Amino acid sequence: MTSLNRPARLNRTLLAVFGVLLLASSSFAVAAHFGHLTFLDSDATLAPSIAEPPTWALWIAAAIAIVLGLLILRWIAAQLTRRPKTHTWHLEQNPEQGSTELAANTATAPFLREVAAYPGVHHARATLAGTRQNPTLAMVISTEQGGDLTTINHHLNTHGLPRLRQALDLDTLPFTVEYRFTTHAGIRAH
Image (cartoon, rainbow, N blue to C red):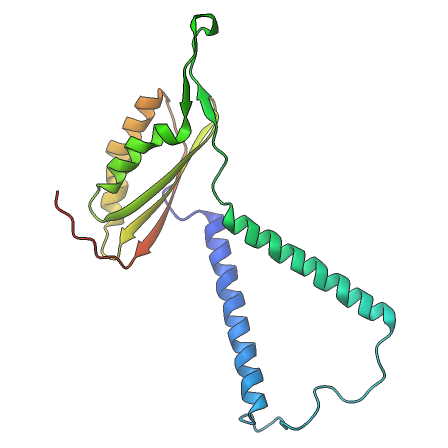
């Protein structure tokens, strides 16, 4: 599971498609306005003079615009809140004898320091989500342009994740890793 997750790829693909469409349409409009397109008359009206559309057509156009606007707002909100919800874990064998609570970000702090020290890693973030019975770890690792992802994955799978599972007393810990490349060259001394 150490690859860019599907929603992130889909979002990036959609953003790229919308960006290309907007760039192409705006370039076309600017070229038409300044008369650089020989098959269009820059002085012609956009639509021939015809009768105004019926009122119901305007209401449908407004409804479609509102629905599209709300969908776009929902999509933007989803981009801003991509981190899964974390919980405080209750680690008790016998509640009568007391209980121990562990904040998810407290559990991942040493793990993130270790991952950030791997060769080629510039920065690491992680969210430990779910409950102790059904945990999930979502990581975002910023690597340098020349970072070796194979080596980073090897360190994660052989050192970092087994230690985190042991510290949390878990047999398995499903995880996802999203790699982001940074332009920072980051000289490190180990």
